[in-house]
Amino acid sequence: MRKRQGQRKGVVLLMVVTLSLIIFIWIMGLLFVLRSNVYNLVSFEERAKAYYLCETGVSVAILDIANGKIGTTSGKWTERQFEYEMGGINYFINYKVRKQNGRWYIDTWVDQSSGFSREYTLAVGGQRAFPIFIRGFGGR
Image (tube, rainbow, N blue to C red; front, side, top):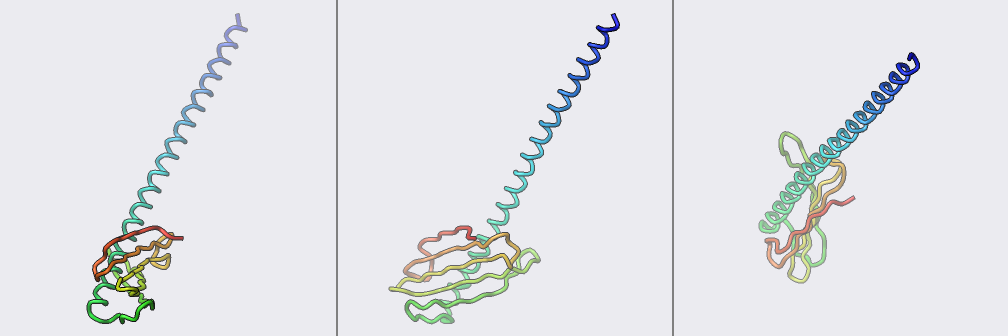
């Protein structure tokens, strides 16, 4: 009779270890999913900030064109960097402008020196000073 009681104790121990392992694996999977969701949320926030900062760079470039601060030499790039404060944080926004064949081309970007994990670029082009097409993308 003692042999059977010992066998039951071994089965219960095996069940407890197996159940603990299953719970541990489930918790680790849950933590992995939560971590990746937080990373995606932070990455989305960073991309949204960078996009609107790049739009600010486009707006400043358009104002500089309208105010005559940028020459109309065809094919030559004019570059400028300026500091912009948003939410109590200073960001460095860069832009390049050129006019070629009657069309304006503006590239604006914020880079890692502004606190982003990578460089973001927004390219704008059109016949008038106002953008016809806007294409944004994350760079390096």
